[in-house]
Amino acid sequence: MTDIAIVGAAQTPYQRCRDDANFAEMIYEVTCGALADAGLGISDIDNFITVSNDFWDGRTISSMAVQDACGSSFEGGRNVSTVEGDGTFGLLYGMMRILSGAYQTTLVVVHCKGSEGNMRQITNGMFDYIYTRPLGIEAIGAAALQARRYMDSYNITEEDFAHVSVKNRGNALRNPHAQLAAEMTVEEVMASKPIASPLKLHDLSPISDGAAAVILAHRNVADKLGRKPVWVKGIAHCSEAHFLGDRDLAEAPALRDASRRAYQMAGIKKPFAEIDVVELYDAFSYMEPLWLEELGFCPRGKGGELARLGATAFDGPVPVNPSGGVLSAHAVLVAGLARVIEAALQVRGEAGERQVEGPVEFALAHGINGPCGQSHCVVILGE
Amino acid sequence: MTTSPEEHIIYDGRIKMPYTWAAGKTSSYFLTQLRDYGRLWGTRCPDCAMVYMPPRKNCPRCVVTDTTWVELPPRGVLETFTVVHFSEPSLQPMEPPYIYGIVRLDGADTGLTHLVSEIEPNRLRSGMRMEAAFKKLEQRRGEITDLLYFRPEGGGRQ
Ligand SMILES: [Zn+2]
Image (cartoon, rainbow over all chains, first blue to last red; front, side, top):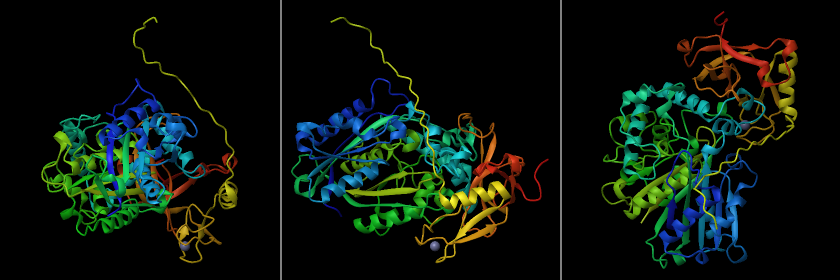
């Protein structure tokens, strides 16, 4: 349990090419949305976190370009700081700044337009320039190496992954913010265009534009703010080795570590029994079962069975990505904070058509950054 | 005020930024040995004895200086692979389909990500024995691509 609550949130719809708004205009849109959701005015916010990536924005110090739009210049300028990483890392940093004692509230904003740059060149740029970048490998090729390693380690099949795509794209039909929503069959996923074996077109998340915002408040003020607070019950972050070859890509020890520390904070002992809904960062179909194994929802190597047997279905015992997940909308950096917002809506009971059945005592949200999930942030939300 | 129909203006841009990156002493030794002799050197941690490929100034686990160079044979095991089908000419070293793999050289504790060739994609299996193919001496430039690719041990497809 922490002393921090989410008291307001907003996200844009996600689409391939958002050509009617620039970065700052998207940030203004979600800033207004989050303030309205919280019932607050800009003067109630005393600290700001902007999350962005210079390569994706095509400029240096990209975080500075959205300060006017998120309100941090209000009354001659308030405190603003910045994160280059997933939106969940911005959430963690925003919490830390409140817990420093210096601030009562924090607005965390994140934006990305995948459509405006070259995703492949940008993700090639995340690798070291001596040994890896000259090979031309980028995010999809690296993910394919991880998917193959995972399959070969535990006899998991491409069909197992296809079940995840079918589930999440189907769930997205209930989410008006989603970009890709469809009733699909396993056969259609299997027959989709090969991209980098074993990954095919429908194993991949789309290229998306979008933005999201969350307002955090300290316990001292959260209860007085009108909007029923959603508490951060547990949170932890962990990162692993830089070189792909240093890691056993069939495992994610950083996620194991982060989740165990987040569970301990929240007082969770049996995640499968105690957590009611999960929103995780499935940038590729294979990631959902692999992450679920490391989150302790099933034994190692059994992740493939979860979607196939319906355990993670919308009406299953633990719905995973009822929003459609990242497979249905992937604004990079934004996608982790979108998972937090989706989890918060589930706790409030305000997820509309995608609200899962029964009360939500604990909801888990998850964000990643770096190739093949090099770093992970796990967030446990509850009433 | 005159009115005009709604229009969304899109700017075309390109950032081209030159850099000169120092490889550092450790990688410089590795790259000159690769260039001049076609040899592959890893480093061994004095505390945990992990042998790293590519070599490191320090062991990332123990955070002590890796003081010992270890010559590794140009052979090892394919840990994972992918056949790339999509095309990105600005980036890719050859026309797709082509293959990436992670090869753990004999005696190393970490794998090297590189290209794989001289094999039909449907014959690829994790756990296969692989050997390194090098560029000709006069073509080597002190780059990781002086190691051309890995191929099945004992010679690949001719
Ligand atoms: Zn060591």
